[in-house]
Image (cartoon, rainbow, N blue to C red; front, side, top):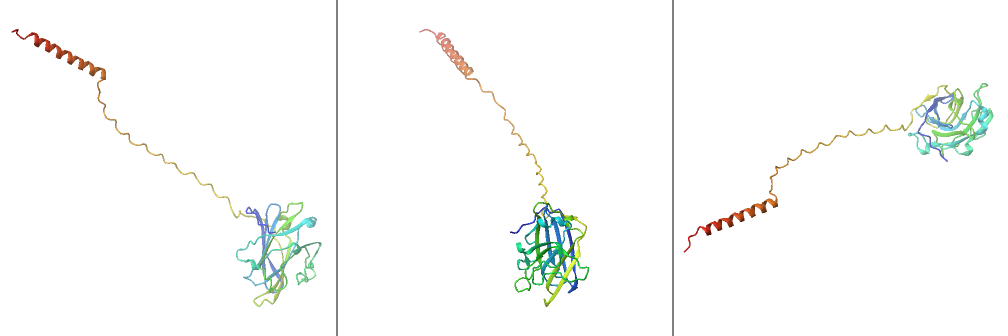
Length: 253
C-alpha cells in the first residue's frame, strides 16, 4: 500500500550524504514530520554523477523504539523522476538490528562494509531494488516510518548517522560508491504545500437609484350625478313656466 503525504507538512530535516570511498557521488534526503509518522525522501544527485540507489542505512536516537518500527511505501514526491526510476519499498525491504551492523543480509552487495576501524554501524536498513540496472535503475525512493504505539518526531533523527549504497555509478555505469554523513540538528518549519485560500471578499453593493417620479396630472372636478339631475330638473321647470306665461299672455278670440 502506498501512503500519500499530508499536505500540511510542518517540520523538515534535510541534508546531503557524500561518498567516503570510490566514485564521487551525492545523495540528498528530506525527513518530514507528518504528525506522529516521518516521511523519508532520498534522491540521487545526478548532476554530480549517475548512480543506481541500492540501500539505505539509518539510525534512531532512541533504540528502545526499534522493535515497534515499520515502513510503508510513499508516493513519488519527485517531479523529475519518473515511475521507472522510482522505487516503492515492500515488506521485505525493511530490517532492524538493535546491535548495529553494516550488513543487514539483503545480498547483492547491498552493505556498507569497510570504511575503516571507526566505521559506524546502523540499526535500520532498507533494500532498494536489486543489483544491476537491467530491471531497476533507481534514482529516488520515499517511505513512511511509523511506530506501533509511539508518535515519532524529527528529533529522533537529528545528529544521527545515515548511510547510502550506490551501484552502477558514472557514465559507463561501472562504478560503485558508499556514502555516509551525520544529519543536521536544525529542524526547519516549512510552509504547507497547499495553503488554505484567502476568503473571497464580499462584493461592494451599489444601491440602485430610485426612478424619477412621473408628475401627476391635474385633476378636474367632475359634477356629481345628483347635481346633474338637479340642474336638469330645474331647466325643465323653467321651460314649463315659460310656456304657461306665454299661453296666458295670448289675446282671446
